[in-house]
Length: 574
Image (tube, rainbow, N blue to C red; front, top):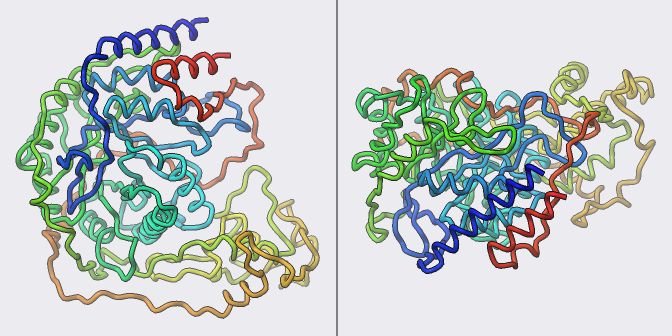
């Protein structure tokens, strides 16, 4: 009953606000495009600066939900009640962008996306989710990941207020795991190519990095430098920056050095997170500097971290258990800062085209291959699965890394291994985790005389088929499995592209800046965006189950607001 009352109160607020503004001219919302190293409104041709906030609710520790019908994460754009409730606060803050870290591609987003569009708010969405993402400690780019990324693109591409997609977030966050970056650049390549092939709007795709001074220049260079392909260059580059704490300054915070590194960067750059909380309440004095005359020449704005208050204490509002919102002290400060700025951009006809950029050569600090992982081949992996006699059983606690650690000690796993430092990618490394482990298990099973007990040891596998005639099997895209696997086995490793070391310093990126000390806060101060080593099984169902959110039907979007909101609210409450 309380939820019902709140729903109608929220609806009344929306209806009243719209009635009060019905005589005002509503400006149409146009897609944002990339021109040179800046963002522009495609309708007005005015430069677009991001005044954003991270808008992501996490599940609480111990929260009970139905894993057979709900995701392990919360999609804030899939719940009309909460997004419409929050919209009035987002408008009050003066934001024009929200960053969403987890999207449920199977949910309907019409109500929230259309309401945000009417309010002039764009969306930057991460393509990954906690259990399906490129891991920094065990990087891969495979059919499962590509399917996830493509599904998010499919779900959001129709909305003009989608500003762009993040292909990764802090995947490589130190010198020890920079071998993961070729996998992210491959993701950028394949997502951009998919958008082109599907004839979708040209939505920008980029990457969000951490601010490690020892690798940030090389990392930024790697994502936009010229390789011998059409799609793999990032359309933008973003950094999660927590250098400015309290009442710092442009000179003392590290912003000056950071701006010098990106002064001539060929793509748009912005802060994908900012808002150090060592001093609270946060004064957000960096906002004036970020959008000031010095920094706006290089930077396209930033995203404050974050809307909801959680255990790390970065929120500007508190979401109470009864569903109501309480403003925290940071809310009023950020509101004042954001609403006080109105940056003046560069006329679009004065922006130069995107220049070429030579890739940084490998060094003692930067050892990353220019050879990218191949585009995952779903048909090949389907046929490989059909060829295996002994396959892994998903018992609900599938852990690829631990299983391969055992199996690859017994058999050669080169064909499923991937190495971003050397640029060597096994011919089946692009298959999903279940197929990769099954390939290794089947190989061990074959080498030990096809003994059943080897396959079924500790219930890790099962005999799926004794023999199969691959000449009678076909992939879903119509290719013959025998021919396809024979062709795969004959392929040679492609030659590795190496750029010429003809430039000592590129666009302000030099060795002195590489040697700066990282000023990023300890990880326990920041919101956790985990790269899980284990896949969560949908069969692990809690005894207590919450009623899942009903999926919204697409015909809601055909109704005129605010009545479409009313229909969704009422249908979601019963």
